Amino acid sequence: MKTRLILNILNQIQEKIEYFPIDISEILTESSALLQRDYPNLHITGIIDTYEGGLEFLKNYDDKKNLIIFLGSSFGNFTTDEGKEFLNKINSTMKDDDLFLIGLDLVKNKIILENAYNDSQGITAQFNLNVLSRINDELDADFNLNNFIHYAIYNENDQRIEMYLKSLVDQSVIISKANISLTLKKNELIHTEHSHKYKLSQIQELMHQTGFKIENTWLDKNDHFALTLVSKNN
Image (cartoon, rainbow, N blue to C red; front, side, top):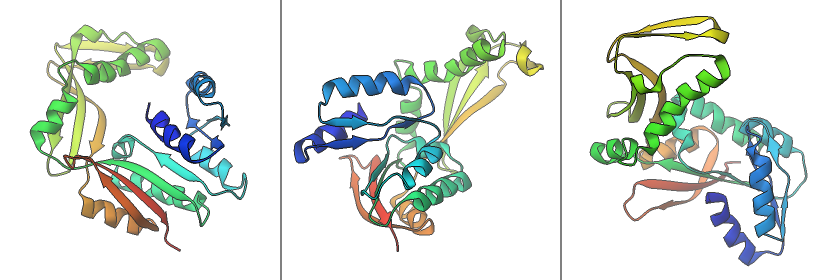
């Protein structure tokens, strides 16, 4: 859906669009076929790889200017060091005229954040519990999903949502293919994800530290989310 918003704009201002989606999952094949069907002037070269690996491939692909896009708030899942390493990698694969557009979730009221990650429809909970389903399927584990609940809190000091799975009972779990046996107490937490939030001043400093020049920043009407467009700071 996010990609289509971008393509709809490009579709209005140029005759041809060259699109290089990068994804670690082979679902890329199916999603690319759907996009190709709906955008006749779109040429797609799908890259099934890590984001960094795909960009390394594109670095010497041609001399055209590229717009590199990292949407959503996935960057927040990195630690500080991992985030800087990722941005340095992006910078190193960019040509002088390339641009990079990144989405970053902003620091906001704790209640707003915790309500978002403990949404009433339980979508985030399903996403979190799916981790255990994947371990069951791929590593022959015997997690009983009914014995866990999703638990998310906002750590104001570290500016991050912390996502956990909380054990509802004393239990033992075997992960056969990993040769691991776990014993969990009631209310014990399994940490699954961090999602860091940023102040605008921190975004500016982060981009400066990793060799970027900020060209523009767009905010939503509530100042909850930022889209930042940067170039290489040559």
